[in-house]
Amino acid sequence: MTTNQSIDPSAAALLPVAKKQGISTVWDRHKAMQPQCGFGQLGVCCRICWKGPCRVDPFGDGPQVGICGANADTIVARNVIRMIAAGAASHSEHGRHIALALLGVAKGELPAYQIRDEQKLRSVAAKLGINSEGKEIAAIAEEIALASLEDFRNQDHDKPCNWIASALTAKRLERLAGLHVLPHNIDAVITQIMARTHVGCDSDPVNLILGGIKGALADFDGMCLATELSDAVFGTPSPVVTAANLGVIKEGAVNIAVHGHNPLLSEIVCDVALLMDDEARKAGAKDGINIIGICCTGNEVMVRHGIPLATNYLSQELALITGAVDAMVVDVQCIMPSVSEIGACFHTEIITTMDDNKITGARHVRFREETAVENARQIVGFAIDAFKRRDPLRVNIPDFKQTAIVGFGTEAIMGALGAINAEDPLKPLIDNIANGNIRGIALFAGCNNTQVAQDSSFVTIAKKLAKNNVLLLATGCGAGSFAKHGLMSQEATDEYAGESLKAVLTAIGTAAGLNGPLPLVLHMGSCVDNSRAVEVAGAVANRLGVDLDQLPLVASAPEAMSEKAVAIGTWSVALGIPTHLGIMPQITGSAMVTELLTETAKELFGGYFMVELDPNQAADKLLTVIDERRKALGI
Ligand code: NFS
Ligand code: SF4
Image (cartoon, rainbow, N blue to C red; front, side, top):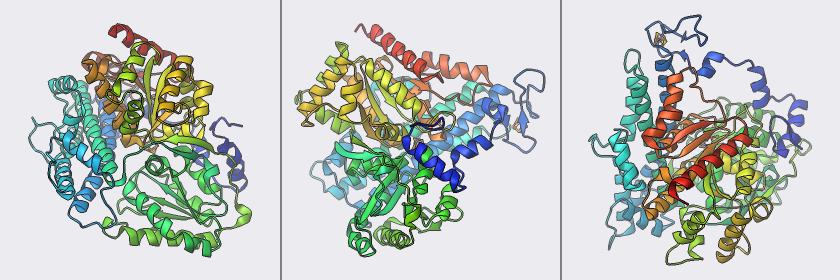
């Protein structure tokens, strides 16, 4: 059963419960917000100074410039690049946090953390050009942490950030350098966007958008380092069987939802939960402690440790409405402020943990890496206490969950391919792309948005592409969506993959010891893990001696919502990837900016935005693009 708000059966089961209990959800608030402001939708509302707000009349009858004289092109460009700056700030702040933690680990200051994957650490060192031969692990970690932090403090404009320089093909780096959009310092580039968009500064839309693209590439740099350093500290993902959807909540357990993005907290909560399991049992929880994930923190612990995923962005409130979540522990980003009010309708502890991310009405436990275990113990203790207050009569756990095989980072994908050709793991992938068994590759990323029925665009596009033999990768809430709907299973491959794709996935999965095909959609991790897909694509491009904009590779964010998604979409374009948006971006009030990002970008970068709200047509357009690229490659 589905609703027009969501195709997730858990939503259909729980929305009536919410209604009966008088609890409003994101969908109720969306309805109450209608009609939404048309000026805002077009991006032509400016609040950059207090002479405003100014709104340019899209029909040409009213004012065509703001009080300072800024026209729609300037206003739209400034608005969108400020979104990119915020997205880049979010991802990069996450990255900085991990880099500083790695430095702390290297110096022996953070006993709660270790280097769990030494091999990864060494391969990161090699990637960054750090000689690790004969060096202690701690010394290598320190050098890597400092090289990463250098990306936040280098002042030489001509020297690109270390991570982006190590991550892209030489051709791409050259092209980006030629356009002066290679970031030299993440913090500086974000600051420059804020500075140039201040009243009375840059008003040239082309110049503004190029500044935004540099910011988006700084976002890419921040996520590369966040991903790779997290692997070294917490382990590199490898295939693991788990489950997704609200049915992973257990009535007989103390259920702790970890929600947000940063694994520094959730990893330790998982460790401590194991140690405190007996305490939970003593409190009457026959199934002990059950950790469940929401949003990208959920994806992080899912791909690394097989922790089940409760849900993705849009139904985070529904997890609480089950009445069986004892604590929701949040760190940063994508946490609806409404959760504290809904938690208060139940026995649920909503616990914020980061000093710059508090929610009114929630409990705050000040999480520090230095005291991580102690903090996590306190958090788990609150959850166990809350469990004792749970009202069994208000428990409504929908009986929906799907098996998901997840954990396909670059290493896992190479490992699986290596089972077919150990000497040259890329060969089976390249051969199958060349012979057409794999028609192309699509990366699904991004959020949920109340403007489309939750998960529906993801699922519709993916099924159509799979049927047409496109290999599917996913991250973030897109990955959450596929996991919940059973598309990360071997059965899904049998049911939905086109014949040639099925044969390839079966050959690889079987050789890799999965006793059957690879899942239909490969879960690469959280949103910061989008860098993994670029790594695989870069390896293929290098091997073929081409650049990323020549590969039959597309990206799709059919339900995008956040500023982070705007940043990711923009770097995807700058890296040469045709990038579909299934939500109307807030730029259409400027024909010039729209053209820049959809047409001109193609000439400059090879990548471009494609906007198509209808998922069926979007799939067709993505297939057309894949075929164009194949033709150009002569395959
Ligand atoms: Ni990405 Fe992940 Fe989800 Fe969107 Fe939010 S959780 S970082 S921003 S909503 S995919
Ligand atoms: Fe209006 Fe210009 Fe101020 Fe924007 S910067 S609010 S367009 S006067």
